[in-house]
Image 1 (tube, helix red, strand yellow):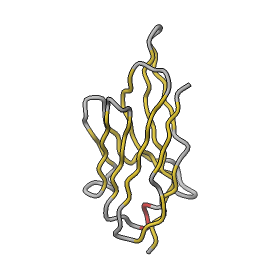
Image 2 (tube, helix red, strand yellow; image 1 turned 120 degrees about the horizontal axis):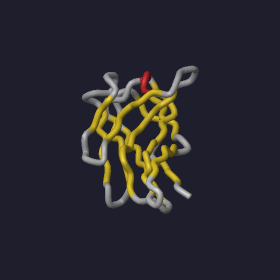
Image 3 (cartoon, helix red, strand yellow; image 1 turned 180 degrees about the horizontal axis):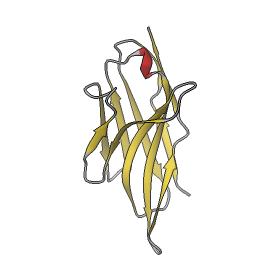
Length: 121
């Protein structure tokens, strides 16, 4: 059973910072991409940032220059450092991981339970 456990959400004022963390646990071979998505009230879930196994990162245009994603392959963790937060960043943030299994080889996407980020104006 694979689990993604997130932490680090909360309430912050405009211009403030938060760090989200996500740890994957369970029995698996490795993790391909890891990333963060968010879903604001009444809107669809959208990609915020993702990082490949090789370390390449990509970001939504709305967060470029403000958010930084990083991962620790050995610890199966991914973090999202969010700076200069804006009210429009308010959403539930979800960790996502593309998990690889062996015998037979297959991959499956897993999601965390979500963590609320609220930015007050």
